[in-house]
Structure formats: structure tokens, C-alpha cells
Amino acid sequence: MQPSNEPSFRESVDIMFNRAVALMDLPPGLEEKIRVCNATYTVRFGVRLRGKIETFTGYRSVHSEHMEPVKGGIRFSLGVNQDEVEALAALMTYKCSLVEAPFGGSKGGLCIDPREYDDHELELITRRFAYELIKRDMINPAQNVPAPDMGTGEREMAWIADQYKRMNTTDINGVACVTGKPINAGGIQGRTEATGRGVQYALHAFFRDVEGMEKAGLTGTLKGKRVVVQGLGNVGYHAAKFLSEEDGCVITGIIERDGALYNEDGLDVEAVHQWIVKHGTITGYPDAQLQEDGAALLEAPCDILVPAALEGVINLGNAERIAAPLIIEAANGPVTAGADEILRGKGTVIIPDMYANAGGVTVSYFEWVKNLSHIRFGRMQRRQEEARHQLVVDELERLSADSGIGWELSPNFKEKYLRGAGELELVRSGLDDTMSTAYESMAHVWHARDDVDDLRTAAYLVSIEKVAASYRAKGL
Ligand code: NAD
Picture 1 (cartoon, rainbow, N blue to C red):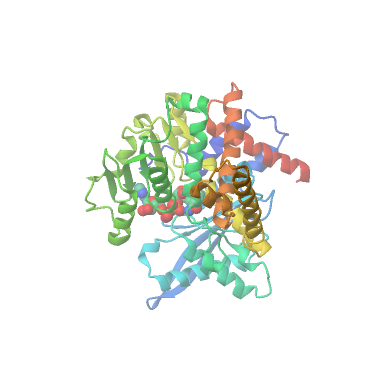
Picture 2 (spheres, rainbow, N blue to C red):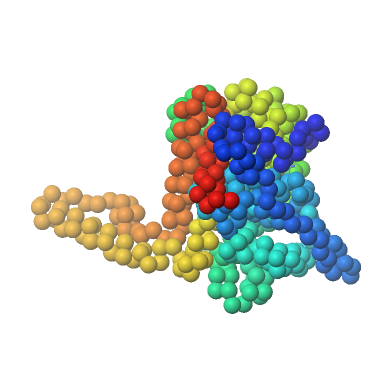
């Protein structure tokens, strides 16, 4: 639990923002203009369920419209409130700017525990919430484009897209009103796992940064690094799966809402995931110790801590005891402003949320572009690329035979070289490039400036500078 003497989530984001702008030379008033949330719409609506009308409260907050559409997920959780939605919308502004996704920041939420409703009921609730937002242009391909967040996924996004199409039958770009849709409803390959994949690419970028690694006191590669993950949902599951299966990390701990699993030799992420899908809980999972006080495992010795569930979990109450030298904020706002200060004092390196989980919005950007161009990435070039590569292979083989050298291209090389890039390969390449470029821009500020001693401040500086430049160019 977060101690009550801590600032709210939105205040926490503002404190971090203020630390960074104090190092900048912005024109008078612009700092305030960037910080404030432009508008928050609150809606209460009723849905008839199980013979009675239930009233729900939802929000859509627009933080900054320096670029449109504005972008940000829709969250279904009992913790949703105006303060939280505004904090998340602000983070979206900075995140989009940092990774150069051409959007302003927004966020939405519905105060609901989705586990209490069946599929049909959830569809009714989601469609009604979407209706309320669509009729006020708070969901619109040109103005405001939501995506999945905690408690929502591609199913909800498909309902929202369909609801928009029903209300805007002649909008040829209607399907671009929301991202994170299933493939057969206008989605893009690689979006579901994009945020987790982005966390993996962020760690790759960090592990290439010699100075950054030194600051964290880490050496070597990701192989064998002990990782504790909190939240085995969309982001945490994919991040943990890729890190363990592809990079050789040892996932020693998984913290969920009903406790934590610990195994010094490493947990099988896929097996734990399947267990949760089948049983709805981590309790009873065989190959691990169960720890009832799950959050206590955040303090366990490990190399990398990946909070991937919710905000405020590392706070004044436990920051001092966090043992990991490196924290990557897969969730939004998992470290409070107070905890951030304590951790900086201890030398803990934090890869900040606005960068670490930006893989989701990056691939959402690709999906939006795909929807507006009405064509799948790679569709025009793939065969042509393959044909040109075939020419090179044929020529090499002919030269080898004619000259009598007798070289043979290995089948593995030929197979890889001849295959043209499809949508998934292009999405991964675009995501990797985005995460590396954004990391380098942050790390440059972190290492080059004496007055910047953490990646979060560096990230804010890079991102606010771009937002400010956009306001200056356009006028207000
Ligand atoms: P999700 O609903 O798929 O998963 C959340 C997971 O956290 C669930 O497994 C849930 O059981 C667990 N959890 C909830 N409360 C917990 C607690 N108190 N302790 C431990 N575990 C708990 O949500 P998600 O989409 O994976 O989002 C997780 C975080 O990542 C959020 O902060 C979200 O804003 C952020 N994020 C998500 C995306 C995305 O593309 N989905 C993109 C960027 C950022």
C-alpha cells in the first residue's frame, strides 16, 4: 500500500516534470501550458444488466493537443479516477514526443472490475461507454484515438471500432478510430505483444550503453540476469516471456494480485501464464514457492526489477529496501516521486515509464498509419524484394560454378536472405529502431550533462523540448 503522505499520481508526474523544466529555459508561461491537462470529460451512464440499471463512471482526459489526434489507452479498473486518468494522459504526451509518434496525449478509464461481468455484459458496457465518447468526438480517427490498457485488450478495441463505424457509416477511415484491434478487425501484426517487446528492446538498448551499465553496476549481457516481474498481464507476460525465452534471463519472481511465486532457478513464464488462464490465480502453481505478501517480493535481491502492473507500487514505504540495481518501469508510474528521490540517492538506475513502455504506442502508430493507408505493410514490396534477392543468389551460384570455386551458400543463409519482409518483420524493425533511437537521445543527455543524474530527467528534457518546439512553431 502507498503511504497516505505521498502526493497523488498526477502530482507525482508534475513533480518529475518540474524537476526537468527547472533545467530548461522555456519562455514565460509555456511551462505551465505544457504541464496542465487541457480537458477531462466525465461521463456517467446506465446499462440494464441482470434486470436492473447499473450506473458506471468513465473519463476521457486530453492532456495536450499540440499534435492531433491525441492518443492514449482506455483502462478498465476499480482504481480509475480523474487524478489517475490525468496523470496517465500527461505521460502519454511526453511518451509520444519522446518516441516521435505524432500525437498529443490522452487517456481514458472506466471505473469497473471487468472480472465481475460476462462477455455479453462487458460488450454492452463497452459499447455504451464508446457511444458516449464517440458522440462528443472523443473517439475519432482525426482527433482522439484510444488503445488497450489495463483491463482491456483487442476484444474491447474491436467493439469500440465497430461502434464508431455504426455511428459514422460514411467515414472511410473509421477503423483508425482506435488501435490495438484484432488482425481481422483492422489490427496490425505484433501489436498485442508490442509493449512487452518494447520493454525487451529497451533493455537491449540499455545493455549496449557501457556508461549506463557502469552506473547501474551491471556487467555482461542479459543472459543469466535474475529478473522479478510484477503483473503477468499483457505487458508483464510478454516482457518476461521474451526476456527468458530469447535473452536467457532467469525470471526468479512473478508477483500477481493474489501473491507471488519465487524460484531461484527460474520460473517457466509460459507455464505460469497457462496456470493463471486455467485457474484464475497463481495459487497452487507447482514449481515455485508461494509468498502471500506478493509486494514484499519487490524487495528481493535480483538484477532487474520489472514492475508491470500498476502505479505507486514502489513508494516511500518500500523504496529504501528495493535491492535491484536496475528498475525498468513497464507499467505507468510504478515509482512515486518520493521513491524516485530515494532510489536516485541509492544509485538505483530507473529506465522510466515514458520510454520503457512506449512500444505499445509506437506500434499503435503503425496500426493507425496502416488503417489510413488501407493497405498492409509490405504488401507492395515483398515479392519484388524476394525476386531481387533471388537474382543475387542465382548470380553468386553461377559465378561460383563458372569459376570452378565451388562455393555453396548455406541453406540457412539462403532461406533468410530470400525471404522478403512481411508486416510482422517490418513492425519489429520499426519498433526496434524507435526504441534504440529514443534511448540514444535520452542517454546522450544523461551522460553529457552534469546537472542530469538520471534517465527520467533526461527523458523529460528530450520530450518537453519537442513539445515546446511544436508550440513555438504553431503559436498557441
Ligand atoms: P493487464 O490488465 O493486461 O495486466 C495487469 C496485470 O497486473 C494483471 O495480470 C493483474 O492481475 C496484475 N495486477 C493487478 N493488480 C496487481 C497488484 N496489486 N499486484 C500485482 N499484480 C497486479 O494490463 P497491461 O495492459 O499489462 O498494463 C499493465 C501496465 O502497463 C499499466 O500500468 C498500463 O498502463 C501499462 N501499459 C500498458 C500498455 C499496453 O499496451 N497494454 C502500454 C503501455 C503501458
